[in-house]
Image (cartoon, rainbow, N blue to C red):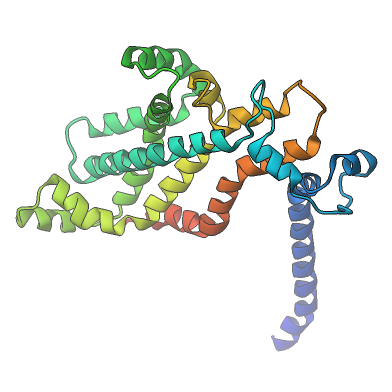
Length: 292
């Protein structure tokens, strides 16, 4: 048996090395657009026109980043992406917080305080996960008009909360199924009510799924373009809409380094979130996969 293992070991090592090499090549191909964006954003415009996409910069400069942030033209306004970036921040933070909290309450009610029609209610919420964005544009525009929230930051927050509740409810419902019902029954016997049980028992053990919900909602809302261009006003547009206006502007000379720097600025928050918390996202998704 030892001789068989020794004979197979070199082949297994070769297979493993080949697999790693293939994965490395695929990773490099996947990261190639990012490398091109970073290199282009650090080059002067004259060097971009004279060199290739993958050539290293002769002289590193952050001028394109500074212009994209502060003075680049997005349509007819030349104020950079800084204001639009802050618009996205003011949309993302409340929308993520509210949709996560409402999803947690929904998941709690659907699993630990079951009522007649709970399964139907959950099925209807689940159906909301599969509705295309384009289908809700007209009814959502009418609703925002009735509420007086059209073309405002608050209106965009409401849109993202409504569309995100279906996903956050699905996450928390599947996670809370794994929490033993005996804990809830014992708390009820001690006189704890609906919200006391939620705050004292369920919420403290919800760290993994809260992480999943926050990362998911943050990514979806920050990267959204359709809702931003459809419902935002001139002063409440998110950074994705401004980036589109920056890249497609017809005023002046086409500055590829500024376009790439603007794209990196717009993508940087989600990139940082996934680099810092990506492993917790995977752990949170699998935390409630087995009923305890």
